[in-house]
Image (cartoon, helix red, strand yellow):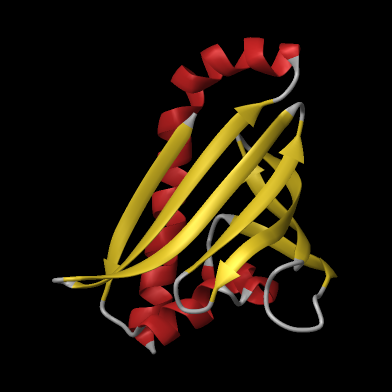
Length: 149
């Protein structure tokens, strides 16, 4: 399952990059995040940064460990998380468009186990809309933060 959303932001690439890579304080910017706990910090750069993120999901706290697997400054970063037989891959990217800067998030859920593969069929119908709405809310929260600077 792949879910993608994007917003146009009136701000510089550097300002957007600063907002999306301030993971330690993401709960102050992104309303859907309840708590962030940084677990590992790389000596330099973003690759290897690992954190535990708690969000409210269907009225209950849901926690996932995420880590950055690839990044190019002011362009994109990719994260990975694993839970319940699924691998979750997310890419946040910044690109220039005629209306300003576009921030895009693409979230891919890959079932790994037989049980996860069986679960993925109903999940596709139940969660795709919920995921898109959540991603769009995150992106709009980032847009708001950048445009307030």
